[in-house]
Length: 470
Image 1 (tube, rainbow, N blue to C red):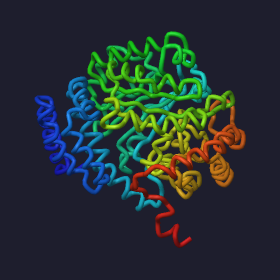
Image 2 (image 1 turned 180 degrees about the vertical axis):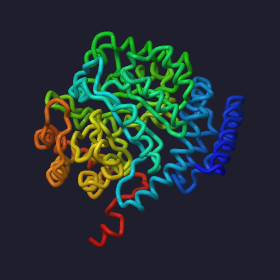
Image 3 (image 1 turned 135 degrees about the horizontal axis):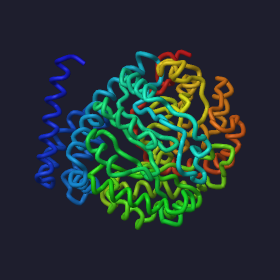
Image 4 (image 1 turned 120 degrees about the horizontal axis):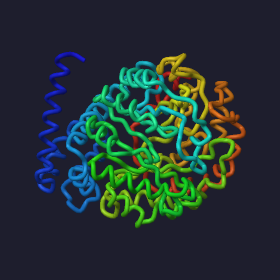
């Protein structure tokens, strides 16, 4: 970075700090004013209609997201707010988005906005239906591996990194070190919360660019039935500790056929808001691993319920002051499947580059390939050519909703199973999804045909000149 860039960034940081203090002083009065000015930065990057809706919401004290912003201003440490505003808002949102889009054109391949990686395969829990539980406990990315991933990613424009596992906080000292060395990046760790302590909360406040997504699933009974006795109370205790220390955190929810009612209930969401949760990532159960139970896949009726539920709880008037995202039923907002490097990809604890955290096949490893080489290798190239895997973005996944697509990709590219315990061939995996895909299709098509959908910005391979010529 040049001296000029450093000066510009320092000046912007000072402006952001003043803006946050201005907001904290009188959020009801100052939020609408500041929102109108700040959102001008994003003109041309994100849809104008979305930006206009944000401006209107900021002027409405009863708006769900106005409440969320005000809660964040009071609940989260100033250093975290400022650091996240710079790393997520400016480095990732403004600079990073432009760089990622430019590099997709430059290198003619998918370039991710987010990279997921597993610092370790080890976990101190064995949650029913969790693919990570099958991964064993012996493998780790070294600190140098993690540093290299971030360094290579930043060169491509990627400024958001998520730690998965295993239980990533087993490596919390190294995670903090990487956060400390890369203040221009935002980091998030998915965690079972059992290793959160006062010292770690203090470190989160110090570096300012790390948030947590705590695994939890509804009631104590529905949670502990899957995650083990006592895990629910430990998670709530961790939330209390994080809120007391003014740290940024949300929840990660795997919804299954058995727990949908519990994880979508208003009392559960209200408790999460009370505990200080600011965001919720909802994941459809995926039947990964040789012990996976396909009967845990939500039914088509439950998926339909989730489609309408997510829109109700996220509504600016009727929703909860917590941003909730469902990676299956929100496909229409991101143009379908975001894996394969289109918006993200996954590196497991052995270093294998996988197109998705749920799809354990690879033809590249960070110890033998650069990240860019992996993105240009056959597996990711075929992913790119196939996206979107369905024009109905409520059927986005090449495994769960379009299993024949994954079968074809893996067989064409010769990608190998990366399951760390028992290799699972693509036909065995996809057979567990065939029934759901068949039954979900008419339901998803009915929903798609009878609801309006946003026009999303895409950089599909099929939209490019080379694809059209072919």
